[in-house]
Image (cartoon, rainbow, N blue to C red; front, side, top):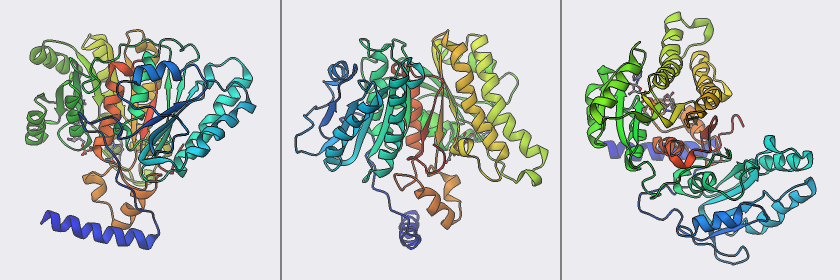
Length: 444
Ligand SMILES: NC(=O)c1ccc[n+]([C@@H]2O[C@H](COP(=O)([O-])OP(=O)(O)OC[C@H]3O[C@@H](n4cnc5c(N)ncnc54)[C@H](O)[C@@H]3O)[C@@H](O)[C@H]2O)c1
């Protein structure tokens, strides 16, 4: 029954999408534990301060080849930190132009630059800022599941590239399959990189709210896959689904409404009782929608979304830091949304809460940084879930393809973004948001 429905849906969808003239996406190469990061060779070039050290760090896991070799590559990486003045920007054209037709499906394009806001020299700052427009446009031109990203590295980073390695590995792998046209900023924090890049969260205790189903369940699975022990929180009514997901990841279930006044105390007590330790990673995933135009929205709908999506993550984080329930060097990850960035009709309450989750990352990164805690947000775009399945066919078909990869993402893709921020290796990335949206056409 379900496979027939799936087939029927596919037929309807493909002919419908064809009639609408919207492109069909290429199947994306996604990371599987134990498989190589990329299935083919990598070109890493550029006259900057990063390339040589980075090549040494990646040598065991990537096969590097010369730029002019004729075989098709899986990744094209350019260290643009050597670009110091506007005239030098032509280096981007000279390097990338001949590479454009020499790549495999799901290829990775990566430009590494210097964080413009941290550069004193005006000429260099202007040139580095220009790279963002290049990279975002490059991402929009790529075909067959290929992506392009920009990693900006603080000017103080040169010899110790520990903070650069994890972001580069994330970009140069199937873990970032549905991340496209994005910018990640790396500060000058020195980090401890994992001993085993296939189990980067080994020894960590993570807590995921709203983990019984949907995206939260996949976040729990991926954190477990990467080596973490996981506490799964969901409302008591989610009972059976929560128990099932918890068993699957060999975690512990904490039935809890995140709006409870003593939620942080319950979390700390559960972590101590079940795992004998503090939580290292907290993922604020629980969220609801109650859509109505503001003119028609009753106070109850506003209040519920505000309480669950917005106030609970702020107060739980604050209290866990206060009561020591979140370990020093910990990770706070909030779930935002494209709707929080671009706005959405009928979602003043929801979009407020989701923009607020970026606010949490931006505002708390500084103060919590003193304890080595990073705070970041993930902003998913169109993700294939029960919610998007229930949309009217036309809205769904257009929505799903309004991005550079011409398809919706999977909950797994969101979970991979969370796992990236959760790792020790991402210790030099904080106060940021990462869009997992296939470079959705709305917003930057
Ligand atoms: N699905 C998407 O396309 C999409 C896009 C952007 C952002 N998001 C965000 O991702 C997160 C997960 O979305 P989803 O689609 O998996 O949703 P979902 O409705 O499938 O799952 C949400 C989970 O949160 C739980 N929950 C709700 N209220 C709770 C509370 N008070 N206390 C504890 N748990 C509670 C629910 O029981 C449920 O298990 C949400 O924050 C959502 O806003 C989703």
